[in-house]
Image (cartoon, rainbow, N blue to C red):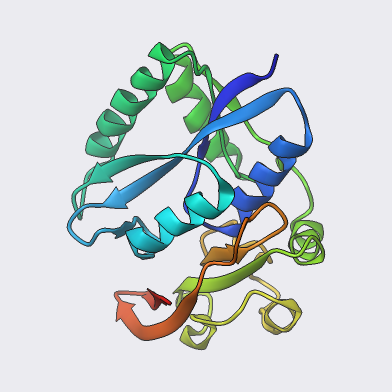
Length: 221
């Protein structure tokens, strides 16, 4: 019998690849997608994607959403407190694992593991230590489609915001930028893939600069 897990989900490609890997195997089954939403903006935290698109994405994947609402400018303590409450609820429902789409950031994995251990839970890392270039290529070869919704302009030009994540995008990336954006260089929103029941209809909206981050708003279509 497969073990139930929550999947940390921001709507992006690394989470989508992690979900795909989990669904290929039989050891775990995803009970819900776990997403943090900034309540003041009604958008996915850090990525800036509208909640309605997140909900359509979950519907296309046939999975329930477990939302964590935090205020804008929330401290890490507030985030951890609200996350803990949701995870404790999961524990009571028999969920002992949380999966993450991390690739190579050791300190982040240790941080997650420490917090989960305090609750008696474990972390699952389906794409851990896989080569970023190979992961990016595999994402496209599998038929996933994504849009870049946020870029850190300290390392990547603002013109990359709103671009389709494709081979041309990867070719144009500067050599110091990880092709999966693992260091936070960019974030994406997946609109279609092999495990989607239907594509997420969307149109590109306004591109907005917030401090050093540039966001491309996606509108539901």
